[in-house]
Length: 562
Image (tube, rainbow, N blue to C red; front, side):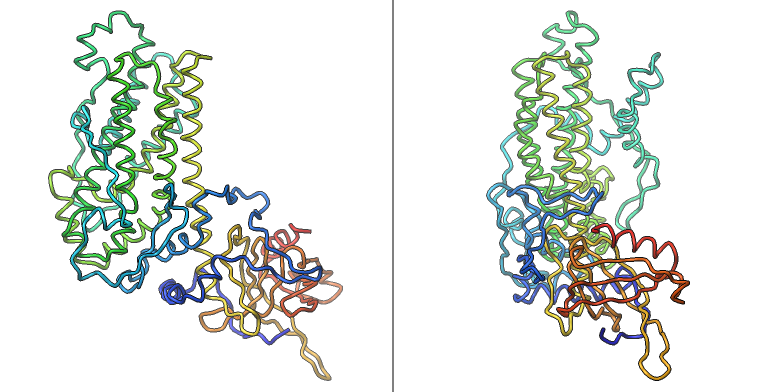
């Protein structure tokens, strides 16, 4: 074994974040690292080259596996560049403008457009400024977009309506179901929890929400005389289907403000770089265009027949577009939130411009943050509305079958959004760790590989025996980083980890307990054996955990591959 430093190691998370991301910036500006990000090199073994399992998954983990060939998350170059867009960086100094995670059809391969720092340049056209793509908005004027409130207030009204149902319901068996309580709780939580007030946000008054239009209150429904011939069950079904239309109109109204008022603001663009603007608003223009097309088809169905028999087929037709737009947007929200928090703390020009924009009447005292979170809220709300429609639809009918398929398709999109966020967090962790590892005498191993994730990490002590006539034992601080396919042993050197050895896990890593009392060892000692290590030879060592629970945890994760 090589000699180790004597300083106590620290967790990766406890090390300076600003320094790490400064090194990340330098890392990605070096073209030599491009291939190391994308390739999955083989690791030599006794039996010959062993290719890393790109689909390996931690046993018992709910971490999503890399999916099919068209999964946008496999575009590692795009993802890593998205990681580089995290809000803790000084974006104006970056020499490229990366695309955020984008799964748009025909955009499987993400490219980088060269640019210079445009902080002080005249902003480009709003449409061209976003990924250089054209505006996909449709020429469509909704009949209902101006009679419904902003989506933020519409959600408040929905909660009030549900509470009113609770107070009027004589039998709670139908209304109170686990699914209903879960959805109601999720919608009440942001209203009950104290909201964080940004420096730019005006003081929020008590919201006064106007009554939302019902299907039975539509002039055309009254003129057609439909209500007299319908049962209460049929009216409830029509109201549930119309809620999908009305809530989409409310949602599109809010998206219009996010795009036309905030994203297109030249004053706001002058305070931030192009990359910051792109990170902040992501692909929200395309989300808005998708909503316009969806609402157009929903309103067309209502126009064709005021007594709607089916909306499941309309939802199904738009699910591919939902996936292509919502998954990238929600996946990038973690960087969007980090950036806006940084700008509010460090960019006075941004704060001043944002305060002025948020104070204008069109925003109705809603903050930018409340507009940016809407796509995530909407895709989950669509699923809840479909569930309500499904309960009111005749069982075993064609309509119910299509609705069930539509609900499941929306649910899959929600799950994919969640999985995308998880994967981005894993990759961000790997990127941060890779720049802190110094392989020294070993050939550097790229950590950022599809399917790899960190299983466990932490400090331990290595038991060493001094050579000489009177040998003595001593403890040296070391750090273990266990991945699902690799184990790295390192020592702390200033702000980096110097790699002392590594081995393929679990193939060449074995852990075993020791009879510590018999051997006169510290009680929390255990044996770690590399049958083939980075040095090319077998290596055995005695490690000492810092507590009994720490030892048990290391034994559990190290023996999981036996």
